[in-house]
Image (cartoon, rainbow, N blue to C red):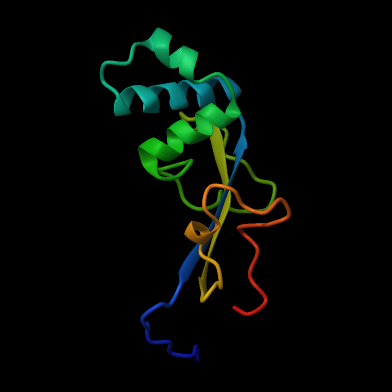
Length: 129
């Protein structure tokens, strides 16, 4: 049985999340990202969306901004290892998700200001957690 932990004043709660997808159709992926960008800004033209969404990073951020995840309407995984979904309209095959709650990380992200130490991994689990 899991230990019951009551919230306390000053407690830091961190949620580490990972979403994996496999790009099975790059053109559909970029088109879906551009459509997501246009949905968030109805005045955005297709031409302007093409200027904003130029690479994989732009596409990921557009989908995350619009849906809060990469493959918004999909299950966390496509099933068996190595099995891909090839016919999704966004050109992505969901490839797994993980979330982990970490309590009492000694330095929440805010405490680093705008510059984190060069060797700092914000996704690592602190040894005291």
